[in-house]
Length: 86
Image 1: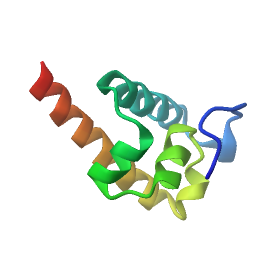
Image 2 (image 1 turned 180 degrees about the vertical axis):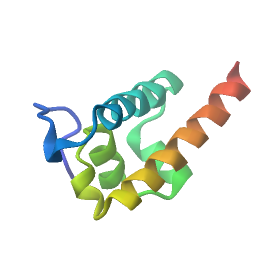
Image 3 (image 1 turned 90 degrees about the vertical axis):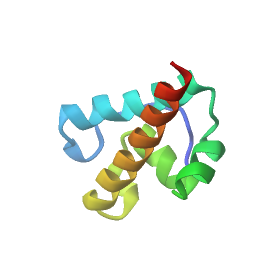
Image 4 (image 1 turned 30 degrees about the vertical axis):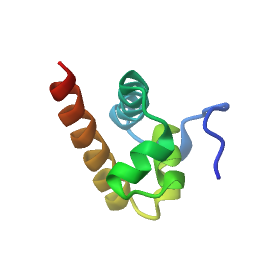
């Protein structure tokens, strides 16, 4: 498993908006009180891919298209649960 928190450089030269989105995903998950494992169970996205997304290590998601799809799925699920709690 990849380290959840650690030194973060700007891997792969990803756009700044992607880096901001990665932090927003992590912040949203934590605000909901979910562990990475809970999010993985709810989205059927491998925990290692979620760790990579939250760490802005999109290169570990095999291809950018997978990283985008995983991020969209996680963000939609988080938004649904946030609205339900709201």
